Structures are given as C-alpha cells and as structure tokens.
Amino acid sequence: MRKAIVFAVLAWALAVPAARAQAPLSDDLKKAVLAYELTLPRANQLIAAMSALTKHLVSLPDFKDRMAKSMNMTTAERRAEMDKDPKVAEILKANKLTAQEYLVGVPTLRMAMMIAEGVPASAKVVASPANVAFAKANLAELTPKMNAAEGALRPKK
Image 1 (cartoon, rainbow, N blue to C red):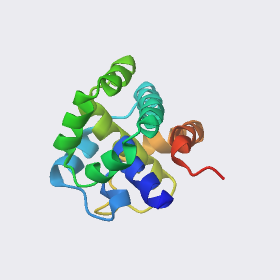
Image 2 (image 1 turned 90 degrees about the vertical axis):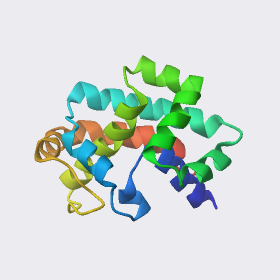
Image 3 (image 1 turned 180 degrees about the horizontal axis):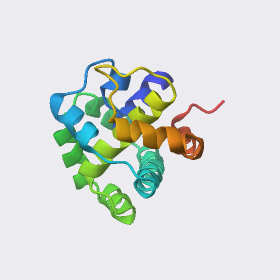
Image 4 (image 1 turned 90 degrees about the horizontal axis):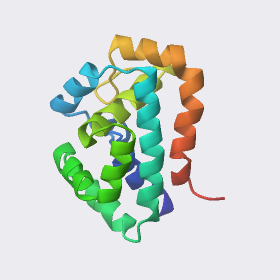
C-alpha cells in the first residue's frame, strides 16, 4: 500500500508522465515536452517547486484520496486542480512558474535526465536533443537536487 501511495504522489506532484505509468505519452504532452527548452535556472525553479509541492501534498490529510483521483486525470484536469489550491498557486508563483509550465517542465527535466543516464528514448520517454545535451552537461549538479526533492516521497525506514 505504501508503494502505491508513493507512486500516486509521484505521478501528481512530479507530474511524471507515462514514463512511470507504463503508457505512451499523449501527442499533446509529447509535443510540449519536445518543445520545452531547459536551462539551468529553469531546472532549478522546477526542482525547488517540486520539493515544496511534494512537502505540501504529503502534509494534506486527504492526500491518499487526492492521489488516487489524480491517477485518472488528464493534464488539463490536473492543472485545474493545481490552480484551485491556494498553497500550490503560492508555491508556483514563488518559483515563477505556472501550473502548465510545471506540468510540462518537470517531466521534460525528468525524461531528459533519464535519457542522459542511459534510459533509451521510447514512446514513454522522450526528450529533445538539446535537453538531453543540457541534462548530460548538468547531470552531476541536477541529480542530487532531484533526489532531494523526491526524498519526501520515499518511505521512512
């Protein structure tokens, strides 16, 4: 049960697309991911927002229900849910991101890093050549930050 909850939180909080859900990306998300241009300042904004959003979501008393519900939401529905939560809006604003930028940017960053780490590109994992080059050039700096941001979701031992 704990693993299912962690997976659900990852799916929403990280906006990890079908790469984790075992289904191909929608055409719209694939186009958005391929068009998104990563930079180091933008990657740092995304990771900071991801860390804060993860902590916020895990702290909610109904986060299990939210996560179960979000597993069946489209990106547009997930964006609408994010827009309704004042704390999420505050976190995104503090990191100079919109919900749409977050929902596209985090999977873009995650998949570029995955490919840079050796995961082959597929229908489930896509990245532009420029974003893969960016991820390879910055992997040593980004990996610990990404791991720390995801840390709140890992089961306590």
